[in-house]
Length: 381
Image 1 (cartoon, rainbow, N blue to C red):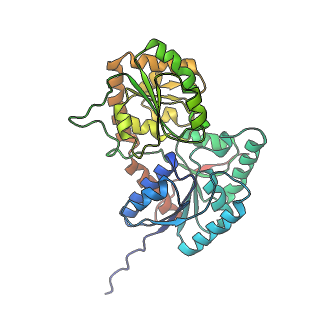
Image 2 (cartoon, one colour):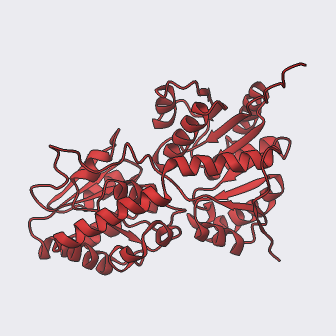
Image 3 (tube, rainbow, N blue to C red):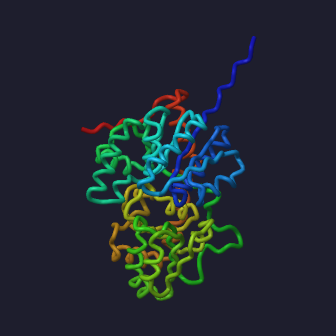
């Protein structure tokens, strides 16, 4: 009697632009977990930046395909789409997973439904712009849904935002996760606090992340907690303008290959974003048992334990509320320690990257016919 033929593992092509920040981190973690589980994993992305470098260093056989693409749509879109189609033809994927707005735009134009396609917005593009541009972005997302087999949102709030914008289709919500081994509390002999009260903000220096609001709030914090210091970790298009606005006791650390030491050194980690899907930095900070202060944008409430919300959530673009929350935490060491320990357990229970990878693989299995249906249908009128 012949032995049964083992099923062929799926061939997954991730497509990503940007190549830095939280989106790139998600792609690296997913690709690593999937390759380690025996999936044939390919990633198309630009040659430069954190993403291709991190993938090259994984050592688990993820194949990287250079794709020349700018971060935002522009006159080169047609050529970028053609080049991406050539990558798809060369790889022959079972399924394509496009990450963020630009990759989602080019991938769906290139594929037009010819391959099962997962689109993960990582925060909707129309939230980043206004006026006519936002109208066009919403219109595109509605049209592109017909070429999207599944939309994966990182939070319930992101799903609601898409639904309200009229983006119809089959949705699955998979909360973001982080590597809880890499992002962990300080070990024996390490210090988890600083000699002076330290507030750390980790994120790309751009309008989305709201560091300008933080700098507006900081003089009030510094007046009430004179010994406190603020460090901005990251780089980006707003770096020069933010440096010009920064006052005393504010430092710019630049891009960090590993943010975990900064989280462990912080007394409080802050991220005053204007919009998100579900930000990774607060999850990473909580995994390191540090308290956080974040703005109440998409995904924020869902990323926090309920007990944290009165201390950790502030309205976006509200420097006064932001400064009050930071001052309260800087003055209360016991509260910081309590929130840090609860935050670590919350991430272990709900936001471990292994859970995220398993949930994503379940979606792939469903779309490829190897797992039961579990999507959330979203229909709008």
